[in-house]
Image 1 (cartoon, helix red, strand yellow):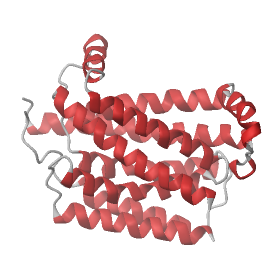
Image 2 (cartoon, rainbow over the protein chains, first blue to last red):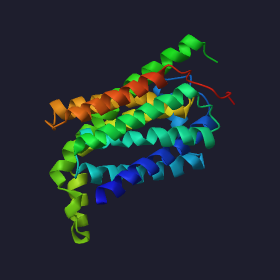
Image 3 (cartoon, chains in turn purple, yellow):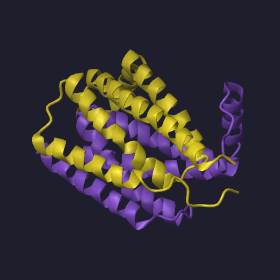
Length: 124
Length: 138
């Protein structure tokens, strides 16, 4: 039960955090200069966007939940199961970020979900 | 704005960094947390001791460093590519995690478990052939 709750936090809080970070990075704009100083400037600019901080807080919660669940289960089980966030990510991308998720992408996400189910069943 | 081939090359370079450092980080965290003890037995009174064990583990810090490298690549790629493209495409890292878990941590993985991971990678292949950007650049 405790591990299921922790996995829930890893998936939901992790995906929510990533969506917030994406929103912040889209506001910062496309990165074209990869010199260290320019990258540092981009990170500094991103830190001024409130969505980035909300995202980082949610990802921190997901991270500590991941640490806790890794103390219970094998990494080869935990990480594939967290792939459930692909379904949540496609939904979030469509509804919160206005991205067009094609049928092909939905099919891919569905196959990923089938794989996660098999991984879960294979653990028993 | 970059050409389409340049955009794809840039995207694939960042994805490569992501699929190397994310699994490495997770495996190192798993190794470190196994030394801390199972969370099923964590009592509230023991939390300070557990936090101390976590923050003094070399494996945990190496794992965090790997995940930070992954995170910087992730932030950069998200500035031009769709979230719903990047997230599934980076899931090839799941296969790398399973291989590292099997060979480095000697975890037992059942045949059905392997099939599940391969199916996930198949899903990734389907998603990976879609265009990296569907929204307008602002």
